[in-house]
Image 1 (cartoon, rainbow, N blue to C red):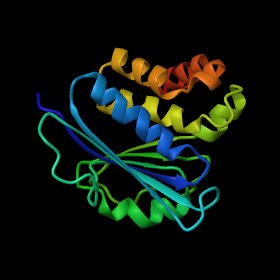
Image 2 (cartoon, rainbow, N blue to C red):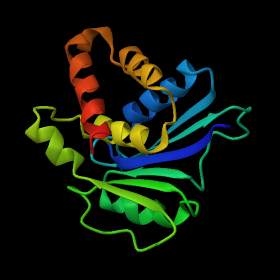
Image 3 (cartoon, helix red, strand yellow):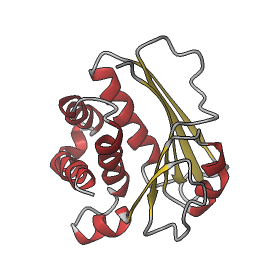
Image 4 (cartoon, rainbow, N blue to C red):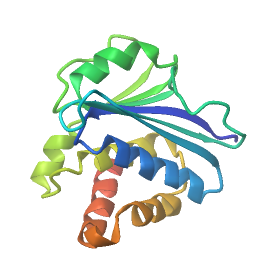
Length: 178
């Protein structure tokens, strides 16, 4: 089966959108896929909008910019509203339902509602809602192997935050259970 994902992750700056995208991209890279990771910021970082395009493919990637994603993670309502209609029919959408109280009105998408921010707070993983959503994305799409995903987390968590490594892995597992 060939691999080809054009993903868009979007939310507020400070929610870890770019970090989550990087983990996904490294997951693909660890499996020997072609990848691209393209961050995009709103006018101000923390509190402004942030989104990230990630492509994972067996073939060379023509453009790193994802305008019609087949996979979309939404972590705030403005991003949900802005991008939901761009998702390709048949695409996978994962919504942080704790922060977004709206349902997807299209019936041509595979939609999963995960109260990731609430789960993160209840599990003592404040700030890791993004990684819970990555775990859910992994469960629903298998964009890389499980081993590659955990290696990606190890690669992306900086040495100065080594204490966060096990928490990130726990967040991945929680997402996979949703």
